[in-house]
Length: 345
Image 1 (spheres, rainbow, N blue to C red):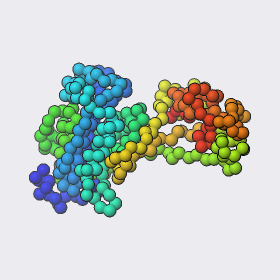
Image 2: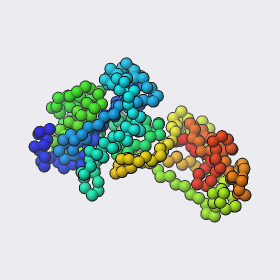
Image 3: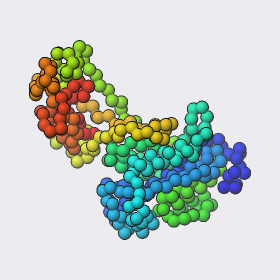
Image 4: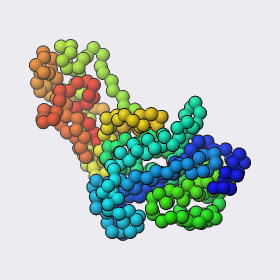
């Protein structure tokens, strides 16, 4: 670090004020796969984008919901004890705590446009696969800065050359650095990745975004002119558009077993997450080809008014749909609710 500080002003100027290095550890079994896989250690290391200096570090153990008891293989590989995850927090809380830490650590930095921040990982697994899947599976919102990242493998190859797939420990040693700490301890891995990042910066390599998640399409709802929701004008609400499902397929066009439930938005929570670093909006349902509308099935007056309403059961199912007639948990349909059915995406 002393060499990096001495070289300040001589290195290549980077596009980011800070880099946040993350390296998640997750539930695992020997010689197999576990479903759903869940994050059990959430570490992060904050690196100054100008000097490569480590500014701060963060770690929270995360309590898995679906496989709460760690396998012996997982404990031995990561060094994480059962009592660590038993006393941990849920993933949504870990994200919120991380965001709070990040805002406090970067307070007063940047310019009028705000702090320029980039997530750094060794490989694409942490952001593209692990965090994205678990947040979708559990309906958790995550800060939008996790939707793009820097896979340090790419600038490492630009700085030191060489082909093949080296692991993190080999890359650290190839850069002339000693490995510090325990391999597969999330925080130690993140700290070593941060040291490798600083060395690559010292070699005047431009650090740029290498991975990006596609943003979800915006939700668009349209109401026909001259109509009103039930309980308003005595005019009837327009019939909903039914969507036809092809036999043997799910609404997303794949096999029924591959269809995933849509993200369920949590109510907005107050605190650091509502500040500079915006959260990712929920994914909109996949639009289907529209067929001519059938005649609506009239159920009952809306709350005793003279207008007639239609039953609405907005229930997403795996590879199927929930019909519209009145059943427990349903509500009176209004144009703002969209079609009678919600498809899984």
